[in-house]
Length: 404
Image (cartoon, rainbow, N blue to C red):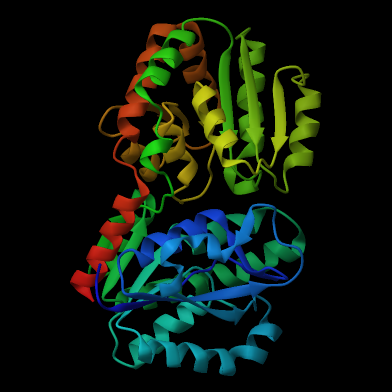
C-alpha cells in the first residue's frame, strides 16, 4: 500500500437516507479496493435525491478500511440551470480537494454537470498531473442516440455530442495518464493521450469464477435439450434489445429448440414485450426484470449456454466478462472490446454490427452441433480466467503511482 493519498471523482450517484449515505454495491467494492492501495482515499461523488435503487446499500459496507475513505458529496446538476447555479461553489470544493491530494484521477463522460471534467480542467490549470478514466466513448453514445427517443432527447443529442467530443479530447490530451476501460474505448482515445493504458473495471472475485466441476457439468448438459440463451443488463436502446428479440424470432422460424431470458430493467421493456407477443415467443422468451441477489445473478450466468448481446455503441460492458468467467460463450455484434476479450481462446462468436441474420446463423450452429457448443463453453471459461477485481484495481493503482 502507498503512503500517499488519492482523490477520485466517481460518477455513481450517492443517496442520502436515515442510515447515512447509500451507494451501489459494486461501487462500494471499488472504493474498498482503491483504499487497499493508498493511505487515504477522498471521493468526489454526486448526491441524488429520492428513493435509491434496490441494490444501493450503506457505504459503511466498504469494509475494514472504510476509515481511510472520505466522501465529499457534490450536487447532481445535469440541467444547465442547475449546473450554473452551483458551479462556482462546487468548483471551489473540487479545487480545495485537489490541493490536498497526492494523486488525482477523474472519471469523465459528459458535459453539463460532469464534475470529473471540471476537476480535470482545474488540475491542468494548477499544473497538477492527473489521470482521466472512462469506460465508453460517451460522445459517440450520445451521437447515436440522436436518432432515437423523443424529439427533446434527439435535439439534445444533436446539440451536445460535438461539444462533448471536443471536451473529451481536450482533457485527454492534457492528462498525464489515460485509464481506458476496454479495447473499444482504448482504441478511440489512445491517439490523443500521452500515456494511454488499457484497464478493466470489474468486481469479480476468484470465488465468482465457475468451478472446474461446475464447468464439466455445464459442458455435459450442453449435449442436449433446448439451447439456453440469456442476457443480463439494461433494456436500453444502446443494448439493441429489439435486435435481440429478432434473432430469437429467426431461431424460432428455423425450428431451433431454445429457451431465452433478459434480466434487467429499462426503457425498452414495453417494446420488447410487444414484439415478443407479435412473434408468439411468449413460451420461450422471458423478461425477468431486475434481480438484486448477486448470488442468483451469478448462478444465472453459469446456467446460461450462450450470452447473446446486440450492443450498438462503443463501450466496454462488464456483463461480457461476467459471462466468460461463468463459462458462458459471448455471441453478438463485433466490437474491439468483445474481440479482445476472446482473442486468446475464442470463447465466443462475433458478427458484423446490425447483422441479425448472421447472429441467428451462429446460434443455430451452436444449437445443432453440441460438440462445438461444449468446446466454446470450455474456451469461454479460459478467456475469463485473468479477470479478478483485486488484480485489476492493483494494476490501475500501480500505473497511477508510476505516471503521476
